Length: 522
Image (cartoon, rainbow, N blue to C red; front, side, top):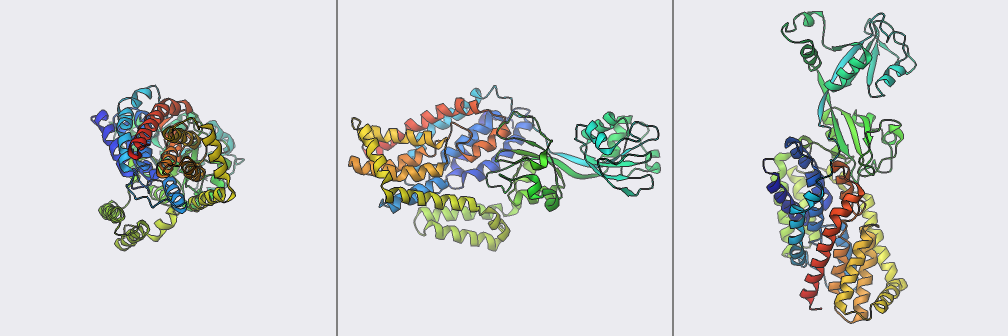
């Protein structure tokens, strides 16, 4: 990244443009590891880029009817209430107008507001190697329990196997006493293996070493270089970070319950809680710790197994080398996406028919598998959307929205309809930062519709005010699921979202309100 300033501008424009036609979360999931890797190569903190990128995605996501599930709920509820169908790009110009100053703010001002954020110390993906620690006769290890030895390394050393002097495997229990000639089979990075060697005051050997190989070592090499060479002979795994996404089956569960080790042959070495991003890696009681979206797992295992876990939706590897599988089919996916959007925008086909056709094309071309489709379908999301629509219907059927609307109109009877619209958008914007966006949309859409009826004005601008307000989730990390993803990766605190998000909230609120008032002549 030779020019970070210009690179950030490109990222913001690309993120905002793409998220209008692709769900916000996949866009952030794609860009997150790429920006972290770019920042690492540029030897700079990623904190100045991740939050602006996330906010640009959220801005782009509100620009079309398919940008987010919240938009779909508002549009569908409005249509059920009698509003004419809203086209995919009908309100795109309104959002684009407000987005100009917002993106300039994210480009020029937001990185400066985040300059004091140090960010979490990144753990670069490293190769893990098999090695052995010998228990020499007379060493302090002789007679020690295996659990005591592991505790000496603060519980960080992972012993795969204990072998006796004849090479036979011994029972690996914490209470097992080590004998002279035993070998502890380890697997870790070169740096950690050397650290264990120093802490345990023992000799480290590669598994493939024997007396003949040792005699052939380069005599001119230093002892450290010789150990490095021996250890590097056998790279069998990697150590990498995986952030838990909102749709991951790990959310609300534990590592032990999901049996990751049995399913993918990978070990969870540590966890960094997403809700306290500055916390250190925790290893104690790891297997029974309940996990949440935004938590970061430190994994060790074969590359292929980690990629498989990522494809199955368990999380996102924070490494740019593992985020774009089947790149040879990317052009097919892009063309199919473009054709699907074009057919829907021109109203040649309904969006649901065009989307189904796109899925069939991707399946036939081999760019998508039935397994990918199954992994992408989240029952939680389906139920959330269905429940939100049902909540909106219930509020209308019981007269709840009519009562709320009449109370709000009475409170604002001295205001013109334009100021009621501005107030409605701000109310939805504040609400969506503390409750589910979809729940806010389910409550706000019939409320806005009823307020417009009682004021005697067209309902469409009020429905759009609700839609825009439910997307102004910039003030808190729990405002939207992608906020939690970048919170841990960027090392942000709650206050960072308020400091950067509050000005952005005001810019978008004022810009969208002015555009709505001007367009509908309120």
